[in-house]
Image (tube, rainbow, N blue to C red):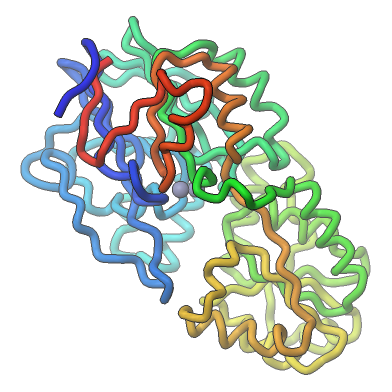
Length: 401
Ligand SMILES: [Zn+2]
Ligand SMILES: [Zn+2]
């Protein structure tokens, strides 16, 4: 089914009724691009559902697509990368490519060459695919190097947000960046993750920093369960480790730190204290204390077990609390002893924009059409002042601009 006018065809293949696994297509008579190509979010047991999304010319049939572009490295945006048909250009940010390479070398070795193929493009430098001009607009998110895409066919401008927020460390600059590099648009395709969680208060990353600082002060041995690529949060743990205490991680995490330190001009992201764990450090760690990053898949979880009953040890859980519902047994085993002892803190905030911030972006870009994606509640936008501009598509449905 088609709705609307002329020239640009926008199709949301997936994401009109779910968070994660979003795939959006923009096409003209001459050009066809795909924005994000992700797997669905893991189920309650931590497993990613098998892929059922086949798009003719993209991951099925003969190649008929000019490029697949990735807004950031999270798997719900990149997870289907290895199914893209040969010969179709893959495009992403420079740092996103480096991080994805490190991640794939660890967990998806068979697909490393597909990531190596990707063309890395810097932010804010327009590039051309067919008759479309595209610019990566850097944006605050729980992934470093995340970007929106501004797509321009010479007549109409479409802003595709990917995942974004304004309440992180880099959020304050968004206003200026959007006004300067985006301005008014015809169509805004916006994520709406938090539209289904309207009553949950959203703390800023600065608030989280204060809370983490207090816990680190109170305990000598601090374990942190945190995504290995949530760079701002990792920065909080690193930069608030007291001078005489160790900041320890595994080799893979150190590789991520080195990528970020090379890429970022900011001192906040240099991770100079980061030490790769080795058992030769055990005695010194015990004596001086530490902040240690652990993950489900990390060998450091074995080290953590030795401190389960130590009154000076705490576990800070710094990820989405939905993973803790008990069905992910490996995770449950890891956190349970700390939960039971009461030496357990959940300190986290979302990587996504609450309704007020989506409305802010709408006011800055003044779109004629708003298409919610990456959401379970797009209709919330359709109830606001902008209701006449909101188009609620079904998966697979197209809108003509
Ligand atoms: Zn996402
Ligand atoms: Zn994301």
